[in-house]
Image (cartoon, rainbow, N blue to C red; front, side, top):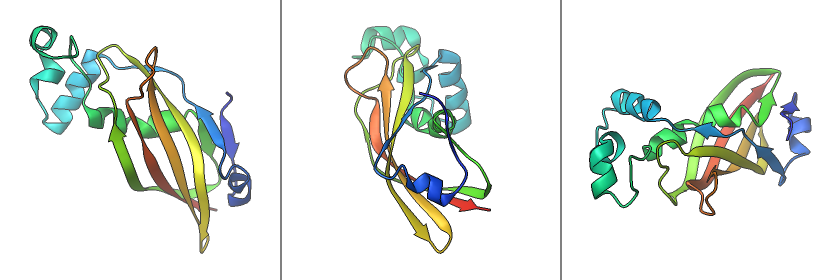
Length: 154
């Protein structure tokens, strides 16, 4: 699906309740997992120790931090939609986030997004987006949830 471009609240409102599309696939590498561990000080062996994870974990190898996969939301969201004519965008809320399956190292993930609702709050667009992080070749997603952005259009 092509990148969706939105320039105003009224344009965005046309997609209320609609599927917005999919991002490209992104490969989660061990290097990315290691850097995330450094940034967050989360050094649990399941993420970093490949030998131990191969023998002791039920996943057969290292897995991405759940919050690493959540931190990819802005990057993947930006591949689905481009909001133009903005003064500012604010990450407002994450609701009902449920981790459904671990993301193994070298897995490919992509974001699926639906516009659940769009409200005009005195000139501020409040967009609630249903998100699913899919894992390539897996029937079960990494997570599902609702994210809310506030868009301040010019």
